Image 1 (cartoon, rainbow, N blue to C red):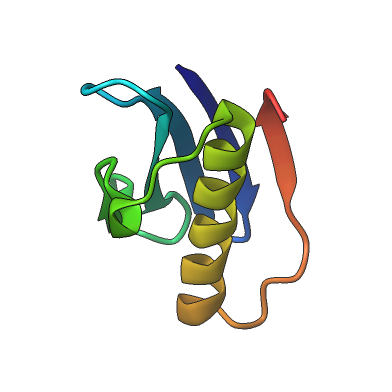
Image 2: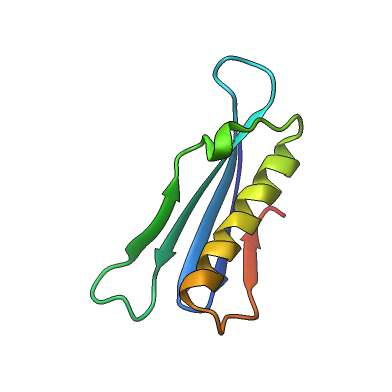
Length: 91
């Protein structure tokens, strides 16, 4: 398992690569929360719990990269003016 997070504008992207339960490869997972300007608590705007398009990746970094790109795509669709991001955790 490997996880990362990225703050983009008012949003936080949580991405992960999880070992496939039936063996062979990794599954990508992503959650996007609005963490600023969302009221008293963060608001979830997107979730894909590990079966993004049913795809498995051989390498965990490839699965994680896909999850983070998918999260950024979601953020850009709800907040098009977003252009910069700050990553924390593992690349």
